[in-house]
Length: 310
Image (cartoon, rainbow, N blue to C red; front, side, top):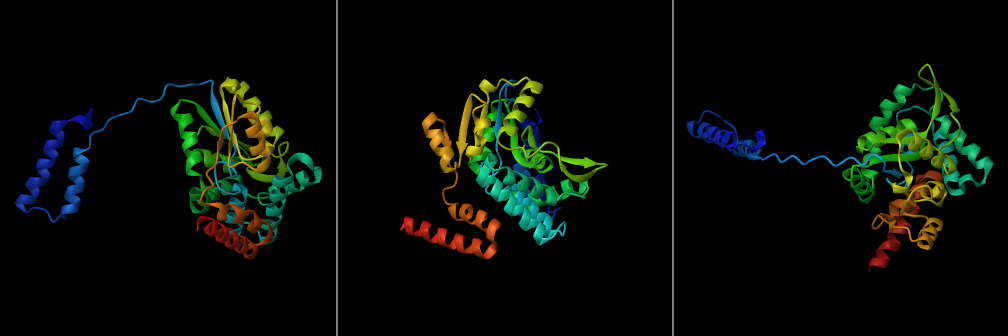
C-alpha cells in the first residue's frame, strides 16, 4: 500500500528539509510542516461492511431526521428565489401544518394539503426545481439535520444495511436529502410531470400514513427485503402503519401520542431535542402565523428553558 511506504515518507521529508537548508524556497514553515505531515500520513483502509441485503432501515424526515418541516424550508428557499409569491408560501405552510396536525382523519384537510403541495411546483421544470433544491439544501437545510439521527442512519449503513427515507416531501427533494446524507434512496410524494414540466397533479396522493406502508411493502417486494429484520424511525403517530410493518420500530423526538404508544409497546425512544426546544417550538408557529408570532414563541420558550436551568 502506498501510504505505508516508509521509504517514500522518509524521502519526502528529506527533500523538504534539504530544500529549506539550501534556501531554494520561500515556503513558510507551516506550509512545509503541512506537506511533511501529509507525506508521513499512513493510509489504513477499513474493510467495507459485509452486505446485509435483506434488511433495511426506513426513516421519516420531518422532525425525525431534521428539525422542522423540510417542505417548508424548501418552499421558503424557492420563494426567496422568486419562484412564487408570499401567498403561495402561506398557502403551502397552512396546508402542510394542518395536514400534519390532523393526519388522515379529515378528508378536507388532506385535499387542502395536497393542493398546497402542488401550488409551488406546477408549471416549473423538474430540472430547475432539482437544481434549486441542491442550493436550498446547502443554504438552509444541511445544518438542520439531527446529529443523533444521522448517527442512527450510519449504524445501519455500517451494518451493511440499506437506509431509505420515507416522506410526504416531494420525491425530488427527498432524493437530494438521501444523496447528500449518503443513504440508499428515498420514497417520497410523486408529482406528475409532462415533457419535464410539473402538471400540478399528484400520482396518487401524498405519501402519508398508510401510503408510506404501501410504499415500503412495494419496495420490499421489489428489492427482496425481509421486513421482520428491518427497522423504522418516526416522530409521529401518523406513521404507526410504517412502524408496525417492521420488526424493529423506533420513535425519534416523538409527539405525545406516539410516545405513549412506544411506552406501551416497549419500543426504543430517541430524543435529540435537548437544547433545541426554542427552535422546535418556534418553527410551527412561525410557519402558521408569521415571523413575529414565531419570534414571540421562541422568546417565551427560551425564557422558560433558562428558568428551568437556574
